[in-house]
Length: 305
Image (cartoon, rainbow, N blue to C red; front, top):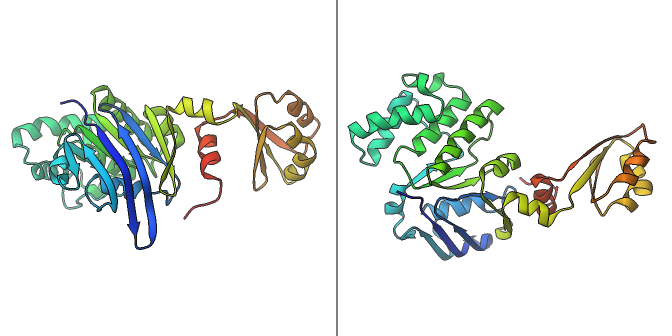
């Protein structure tokens, strides 16, 4: 089967007087990988819960393929794979038994599971761990097993909530390789992540939300080209702020300050770089602007809890 499309229109969710999601529109085309980005409290996880029929919308409509959610969420979830933030694996079972039991929930026969489980373990780099107990696995292995479990029903839509949080670079790359193979197979993927490099590598399109609303959308490279200056110089040091006020800011098209770092954004930093050569008390880095710069410009640098 090909991937499932998703259509969300005017989605609203209130908890008491507090609006967590406020009129969200989101379309995911079949076979597309879409990243849903936003700071803590932006409404991402609540949106996923409503999409999966686990929370009742206050207003709005949700469609997965031909199924209206939440009315037909149970049927829709037979074609959806879910990778939650927390690895809720069963510690009493081995790796393969976790997949076997989960597959039985979908009514998948023993013969099909016997073929599917080794393939999923190979996809997630766990081929040698089929008989291992869960408490013998590293954190990265548990995360990869949670992904394998999400694929046990051969889903057409895969929903991943921060799939690589807490993983080392090697484990992240194994998961990325697996997800790229799934997109090549035509699966539809919706992913939330706080890693901008992950979003840029994996996603065909990004939707950035904050305070429950949609604030930007587009291909990662298009967002960078459209929403932010192409170059940034980061200036570090105890005197960076005062030095920048006198020398750098007049040469910046836009600037941001965080602690002892001044970020100068623009198109041509020739003059600024020349001035920095005469400021040995400061350190600086010149680089192209990236998706993280876009994200921080749109959502701010203040810490969210």
